[in-house]
Image 1: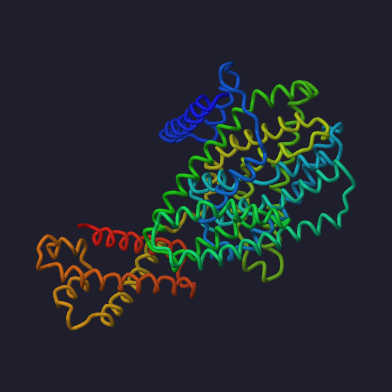
Image 2 (image 1 turned 135 degrees about the horizontal axis):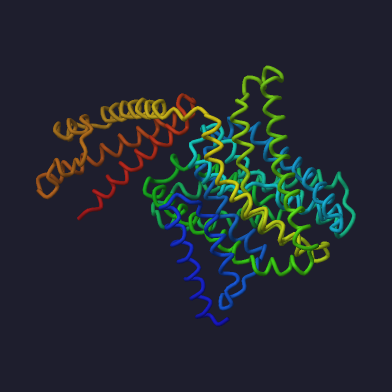
Length: 522
């Protein structure tokens, strides 16, 4: 295909992604499901070019920015608070799923062999970070449940990929269980070390940057660089990117200017929107090719229906069994666990959120050529992704049927008001410390009154008001800095929920950005 045609198809690809997502969003339908359907239909149109999955492109080109964007928005404080639950799901549940689904796949499809069955189970085991976050954010789940689901889906990819590598090794050679355990420990350890190191380095490098363009440009390269470095060191690139994103998101309010944070949020939202939705369209576009391979190598229609049903049942049951066992261990185990237990209804909600996506799509194409019935396994993975996306549509109904306690929006708003009141008091104290005899009393009075649009109040167009404006800007910057410091102190002392802290920081960033815009006006 010539370059002009390639560019034309890329543009069409982006336009279809945006149009379909926008249209289904207006009617409240699932965008991922709609994009898969549109892509699947298009894959059978003769003049639509046949696409094929390049797993390295997805693993090294698409997965890092998607994970990084999701981690930037995830609270490190909340992840720490639920780290035991998250580890049980991201490590324990994945391992349990690999065993259950692997044995089930081998039982209903013995021709693939046990090693290939376990490799396939590792492919379909991890939930999708983007899809789970999107669904969890729309159905009004309790924040604790949302945190657990986000943490699980961010970290379980690493466990699944290590399990996949071990299974692939078993397909092509002999694998040692001790080597598998060592590889897992090495992957996690190196991934965490690279992530923490990259986050600490970025904190130092970003601090002197004053240009939002420079900062955003630097950050665009970070997930790719971190993933590649961790991979070269035989660590988990997934964990490295996630740790870096969590670290950077947590430290950014005290490191970079408000304009850079606002710009970065917009850029990463755009990247996440485009990539996450484009991937689902891409999944659909592979349908024709995958189906051809499945027909050529598969056992036939009705046996396939039974195989798919068995695999989906194994996936669903393994998740429900593990989550329910975990729930009861927390509720009836030692006191240290009972203090951190969650309601059975919350456990059912967690068990019901099991959407697969981009990692499953990429990982199944990592199966080596000598894998028995490789094309048929690719088809089964495609069906699992689509079925899980469709199943995710039922999550809102399940949540409503469970009658889960709604988020306490009143309490959250109250906490935001209390935190902002503390921040304003800190700003007023800083005003008293910063004001000089040269500052006009009128300016100080307006700042104490927390007046909005102070430049208009002082009639910025008048030459006589220019010294007042300079004074006002200097004092207001000092007050805003004190407000942000007060909010960060409250965060360290854990006196407010993280949702209140983030809301307060966004409000302060918006005010500082507005102030700097006033200063930049001619």
